[in-house]
Amino acid sequence: MRRIPGAAAAIGAVLILCTSVQASVRAPGAAVATRSADIPSEQLLERRLNRAARMTVRSRARVHRLRLKAVKRRPPAPVAPVPAPVVGLTAPRRSIPLGSSVVLKHLRDDAAYEAALSREFVQLTPENELKMNRVQPEQGRFEFAEVDALVDYASTRGKTVRGHTLIFGKETPAWVGRILLAGDVEAALRAHVRAVMSRYKGRIREWDVVNEALETNGTFRHNAWFDKLGERYVEIAFAEARATDPGARLFYNEFNAETNNFKRASELNLVRKLRAKGLLDGVGLQLHTAINGYPTRSELEETMRLFADAGLEVQVTEMDVIAKGDAAPGSLTARLDLQASVFKGAADACQAVAACTRFTVWGVTDRYSWMGAEEIPLLLDGSYTAKPALAAVRAALSA
Ligand code: G3I
Image 1 (cartoon, rainbow, N blue to C red):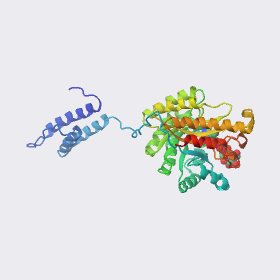
Image 2: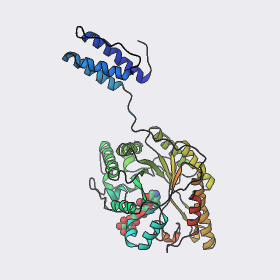
Image 3: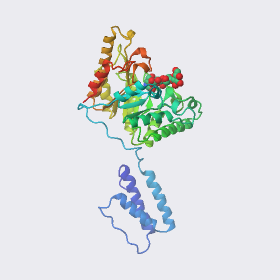
Image 4: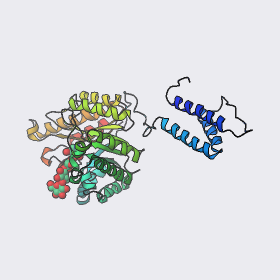
């Protein structure tokens, strides 16, 4: 028999086998269909199988075995269609949405916070409410009330929500570490991803599926997932996420990988593999930085283009810029101006790279920054007054 490569070989082999089955079990007088060049081979196979299936019980059993063989020989179906890559490196100027992390408690307790959030930002990222230790503090006990409230708030205000984050080693509840068997850890990981994503299907369309899996030196961080499953926990999480909500955009989110360093190299390696398997759509550059040591616009552009070249969307996901007095010398005015230029550099880089689609800061106001209000790292000060950085970012992100 002539060798036919790949899938064609499988179909061809089954056709030949079917023909011989048909010949040996054909009822006397039954007409044999002539193969027409117009009939696709799959249809022809189906037609022959159907005819054979109408024959004796014995031949049916044989056909069944052939069907099984055909299924086994079929190449595995892709997990999900790979979304089209973001094409084109030269970005036409466009309006890039500005987002912020949000804390439900402040939204409820502080009217000025709610007003500023509503006025300045079009996309919200729950700062902690979606983390696994909050959503599933005990195995099988899900606490969705806070996330529900945030998602409802966003929808009444016409804002989108970024899902941060499904699997984050540092914020994994203690019970995961007490599971003994790797198979049970994998089941718990899959169950968590499935439960959370399916609840918000259609309402949260972008997810940080895995957050901060890598060390500064590029190796994988130890955590409850890695220690039992090894590196593959990352792929398991993405595969489960893709299967749960094929319409969602899936991101890997990392910090301090915005410049040319070991972590960036390792991240590129990781995300290229995930992308090749159709499991990843984009990367998040967190961009927690400071006025006395920050990635320049050209460094950021280079990094964004590297990820874009890998076929990925890029988002700035958590930017803040420490500008307190001991971060750098100078008057408050000078430090805030420098802070504005650091934010502007990042926003300009995003504007310059077509694959960069969102720009999110890690907090509405200095007052509640995770680093402490004294670091003054955000776009609005502690009294909700706009700092120079807000106008700089707005201008850079606008069309
Ligand atoms: O919820 C408790 C509260 O009940 C208690 O009164 C209070 C007392 O300190 O602690 C509260 O929990 C803290 C929580 O923030 C809310 O304020 C946790 O101890 C604290 O660890 C947690 O920190 C968060 C941190 O992630 C850890 O998950 C920060 O708010 C949050 O801004 C930060 O965000 C991360 C991103 O998820 C990933 N990238 C880095 C970024 C900054 O670290």
